[in-house]
Amino acid sequence: MTPYTTIYEMFLSKILDDEWTNWDEEDIEIDLRQILEGAIPWFKFPRTSLERNDQGFLNVLSQEEIQILAAYMKCEWLNRAILTWENIKPLCDERDFSPANLLDKLTKAHIYERQQARILESHYYRAVDGKPFNYARLAGVDNG
Image 1 (tube, rainbow, N blue to C red):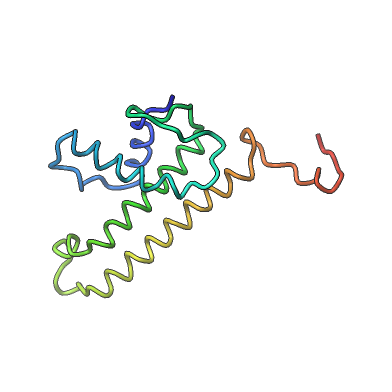
Image 2: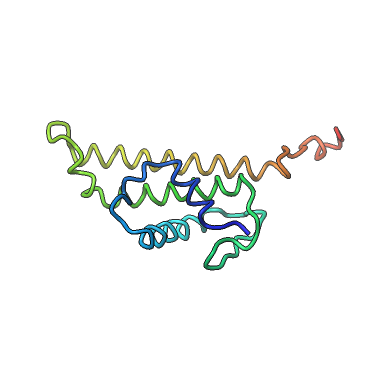
C-alpha cells in the first residue's frame, strides 16, 4: 500500500506551500486529495493499479509512479492558480503589474509543467523494472 501522504510530500516538495498556511489539517488533506484526484486521469497507462481507498493506493507505487503523480498534481495546482489569478494580483507591485503579462507567464509556466510531467511519464513507459527497453531485440539482435 502507498499512503496518500507519500504522494502529497513529493508534491509539496515541488511547490511553495504558502497557500495552506492558515488552513487546518483536515482542510489541507481534503484539498490535496482533490488535487490528486484531478491529477490521476492524466497518468494514462500506469503499470501498477491506481485503485485506492480512504488511506491511499492499494498497491505499492514505484518512485517513478510517485514522481509522475506529484508532477501532474503540480500541473493541477498551477492550473488552479492560473484560473484564479485575481488571488495573485495583490502580491505584485502595482508598477510592474499587468494582468495580461501575469496571465501569460502563468500560462507558460503551466505549459512547461505539463511538458515536464509528460517527459517523466514517457521515461517511465520506456523503462521496465528501472531498465531501458532493449529496442535492439525488435531488430533481431539480442544484447542480453
